[in-house]
Length: 239
Image (tube, rainbow, N blue to C red; front, top):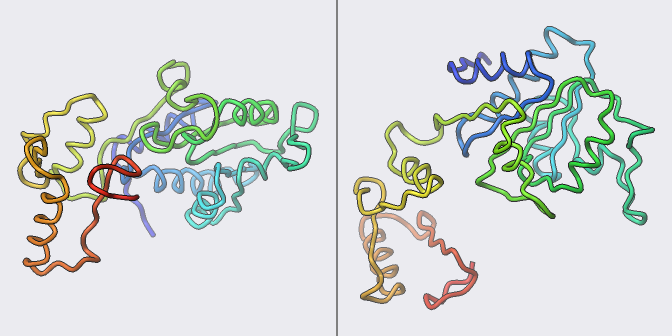
């Protein structure tokens, strides 16, 4: 299947080929996974002799990488041959990974301890690509590795901003971007986003009214999600 990359994605490919280390970031639906797959395909086609290692912090993310690229992927722990009993890695400075290219997806979940051990085992690696969204899944343990690396500006970083999952002009995407930038003027959104001031009423009553309105318009309960920032609250929600 042919994939037509936009200018930012093409620039990301060029930057990756020119750099020893690069960060690819962007929100959900901006094409990170598609670009990752394209980079792997490019490497396989033009430099088939290179050893590519794909990994991610979780088994689910690793399986998704494998499905996208048709290249075997594993968790970071598996790639480093982690031993549960000793909590030690079999891959390290004296027994490094046999990889020319190391690509880590969902990198925002990698913490300081895991990143340190990954680097220790990467003495033979010629190119690194870290893929993730700093505003999504945080580091599992200590640190804010992806966010701090981006803020340091020490590593070339390409941020994808165009969203391919939402229709053009979606105010949902605009609101998400603005909130990440600390802009909370939610009252200005009126097409795709509705704001209800609950200071003068019951949150529960407002939610029930909105659900009733949706049901009366032909939506089913399977079409409706009620999300909350907290595990429990006055609304009685448990998420």
